Length: 222
Length: 185
Image 1: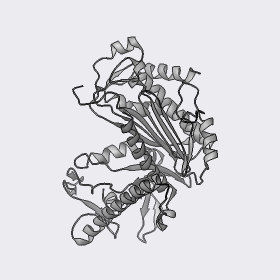
Image 2: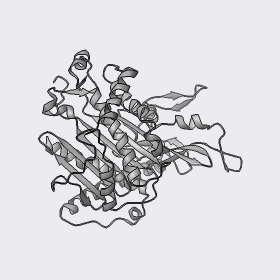
Image 3: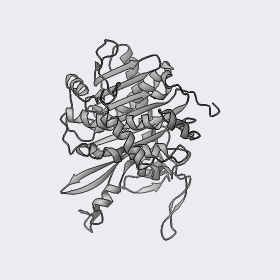
Image 4: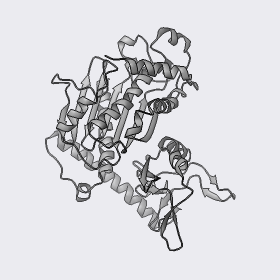
């Protein structure tokens, strides 16, 4: 790796919190909301609530926390008493099953960021946050330098070679009213990921590509 | 930049001051203008004036009051070293507004000015010292936490604004996960 990048160093980081919820939640309420906010579009949801003792969420003094480690998987999420959520996941692209090294799959990223927004909306609805409350959302992709933009689909992957990123991190931040997250899902995803994709030799997906991948995510049920 | 060097704070957009220093809604701030304030873009714009890759942590909130939307910019204080201006910026009449290499600070008179003299310098040092104290207390809390002990919160911290508590929590989480991830590799 000529850019001095260690393969497998990349991860997605998500932070969101209600700006003025005006209340706090105890650990039991947070756990219940975490359960309800699970999206069923993938087999490994963001903020997954497992029951095995070493992987189940644990109460901590300021909320709840789950730490899930596999052979090469790393999931970590925390939900704080003011409703702040912090989530980190190593890129699935770095797992052994992906069969590639130092890649970032654009379609996997669309799935994941779509889930970030849906999970966020479900979480605060489960916590009974008013739909007019502003939610501060931050989506960051780290460990990008030296990665090639690709696809989990082998044919698309062949057509996308040579798009290497020169920057190591890309962070998108915004505040959105809770009730406007789901109606504006597509534009939020495009906004958050447009800034990431352009770092790979100015790549901008066509409109139909965004729609097709998002539709695959939305219609997927596991 | 000046506010971040003075310990952070909030900028509320959309009010004009009259001759009696009373605040009135600025009619120029209509819906589309208020909506155009957006965190990522503002960060990029501010960062383009910073020296040596420095970045100011800021966030735009939109607060509704009497059917009008007001952008509120929350600015975090510097964490490691004061922020330096990275390039000159000239106003529409050619006047120098920002100067490369200068350190700006928001002073007691609510004016943003270049550091000049001991009063400004002391203000800057106070922010830096408080940062270091907080860093030390944080390390101490983690150390005591490992030993099953807790450090009583300072009076000011007990009354801390929920958003400050959230921001501090996020920073702690980031540090913790980063450390665990480094150990995981």
